[in-house]
Amino acid sequence: MPVDPMVFPVPSRLLLLLTLFGLTFGLTLAGILARPIESLSLFWPVNAVLAGVLLRNPRHASTGGFALVYLGMVAADFACGSSWKPALWFNLCNLGAIVSIWYLMSRLPRIHRRLRTPHGTLCLFAACGAGAMVAASLACIVAAPWFEQSVRATWLAWFSEQFSTSVLVLPLLLTAPSPRALGRSNTQPIRLAPLLVLMLSLALSIGFGGPGAIAFPIAALLWCALIYSPFFVSVLTLIAGSTLIVAVAQNLVHFIVPQSEPGVTTLMSARLGIAMLVLGPLVVACVSHANRGLMARLEHQATIDHLTGALTRSAFTRRANALLDSRVLHTPHAPLTLMMLDIDHFKHINDQHGHAVGDQVLQQFALTLQEQLHEGELFARLGGEEFAIIVPGLAPELAQFSAERLRRAVQDLRISQAELQLTITVSIGLAGCTDATQSPPLDVLLAQADQALYRAKAQGRNRIEHAEGLRQRG
Image (cartoon, rainbow, N blue to C red; front, side, top):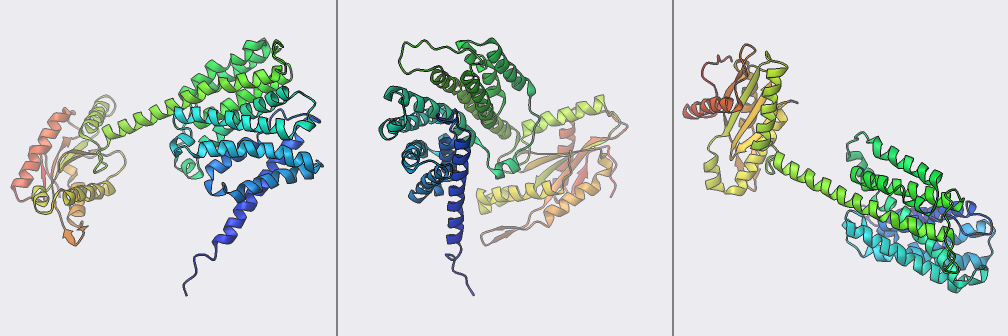
């Protein structure tokens, strides 16, 4: 009996909304409990975290989702004994920051929103600034009765805290890899030198002190940005920025601001300065990551044939020469076989069925051979329908069985294209060196294998021939 596909989404949607409410409630409760008594928080990461969660999960960013966020924050205030008026008005300011950041960042393409470009990082700083302005302005309008400071001081206090915290926290959430990406990533050892230098620079900031001390870690952060991923750099900027803000708040760096501007405090100035300092490392991290990705793609294009997935001729030449050089230096008595393979009557396939079918034949042929190969064997497309395989550790006079296995796999291949069914065959020429012979140059091996391949073609195709002077077994 068919099942109505609309039966299950409602509970699933409800669970997601309850999760959003619970996350908001928990984050707000933790922020309230960590807040000094009768004072604004040194850090209030709730707004930045929720903005990041909504940007990473757009289906939550609805009217109902924002309403649940607001209710979650108000409920946490009530749970801590706050009266209803400050709970409603203060959290309206927080909601204003969340909505502003979300709205501005959600307008960007995904590549910018995930901070994979310098443009995205600059837009994030602008969005954090706008969100902080909205929160600070609302605080001056609706929350002024609960502050003893002037309107100017209230605005600066809210803006500096909201801006600095958002700039430190949001990049971490927006660049965080998904669980699926983590599963695909290759674990590589982390270079410790930049990390150690960063820790040392933070220690020097606290030990040396003075207004300039907040700039000490910038060189180490830039070094980290050249080495690490944007996500890890975001983690480091959060750690460095938070450490400096706490150090300033606790007067550990003796950061003094001349009071020429009424309402400007040491902590406000430090927050804004630290927030601006992390812009450089984040932009550099994005540029460096993009360059590494570009170089990896260029390397892949130069190494792997885009149609068949085999090595390109130039990549094969480099690796084969390295293999032959290694044989000379380390294993001079190790045998080696080079196979030259050519699809029979491939020109006829292209002429009769078109190049699209020909490409399909090349792809299926290459895939069939790759399934038969073992680790350490080099497989390359030399051009057109001609391929080469190097099998280290196998003497050419003993390679008949391996070559026959490849020939049969190709002969048994059935290629379907629309209503067309094709079968193909391959001719193979063998050359190489035994344990008693020196490694000839690669171009000599290729020429010998090519001559053997020519004889296989001349003697009827779909067969294997050895280079002159090699004894055939099979």
